[in-house]
Image (cartoon, rainbow, N blue to C red; front, side, top):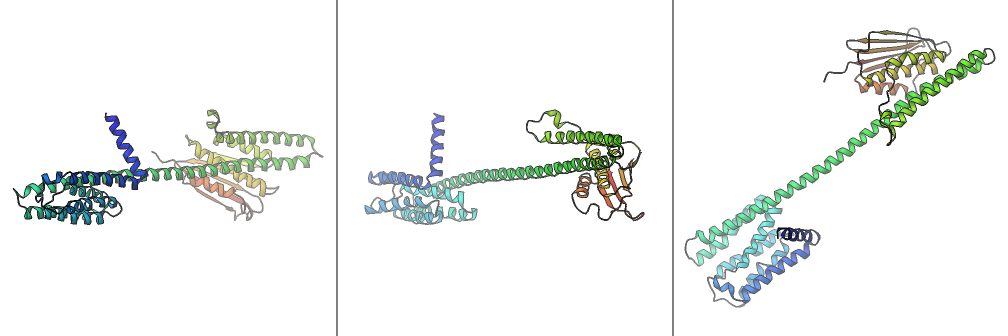
Length: 400
């Protein structure tokens, strides 16, 4: 039985949402039919205070307190005003038609849709017809007609407020859910943009560095091919090694982007500080003399910071290969201290004022540094003129 009642309520709600006009007509027609049965059958005379009324008057009062139900949602105050006047006439004439209770429906709509101040003064007016009827036809204690009217209207008003509060709460939940969805979309977009930037930065570092090394080796090999075939063969071997290393790093980076990428690809290690010697050896093989000094120990420097240091050193040496000239030399200094890690890469190349004027090299170094609240200085040397200097400082990770 309960299941059928619930289905009926759901059907009524669905009809009210889809066809509000149809529902209003059906509801009003129902109460008009009930009122007509009451008036035509003479049932109203059983509780009337005055049965000596013109035949048309009960019909007029009944229709006046019923037809305004059609406007209860669109014009609730107008509907209430008309029904209030009909209620006054109902009690003044002594007809006391039960159709006057239809006003409760309009009060319910006022409580749901209008301000509480409006509800308060309309509620105050509801007792007027009962008082008028008791003064004109006094019977028994005054609190019987007036008190029952006050209580019934109070219950309906509180019910309307409760439904309104529930609707407002549901609407706020829906609005909050939409806001959360928008925030999630924004966060996803930010994460996507950040990932694109990271991938672009990684690919720039990998491709830019290794192609610079390969180009330098190829130029040196072609120059040495006629005079020293052995040197040319060494250059070709170094080109093959560098190319394979670049392909490995690119494959590892691109595998992470695949939806079906194996877990091992996502966990593949990125270059770390332990790979600096291999990086420097590759640059040396490309023809750039590099000296390096390391002071202190990494002491479990996080992988992200190690990668940032590695990429900055890689980018600085790549710039020297590309712009430093044939006589350039470079010096790499890494120092681990209590305040973090410091890295300095200095070269004696030419054209220092033009270096880094285009491309994303220095921009990428600064972006990596900013990720870890570090500082980066890059620019030409004053003494001696023409060289280039890059200095990085990454502070220690704050304790959680």
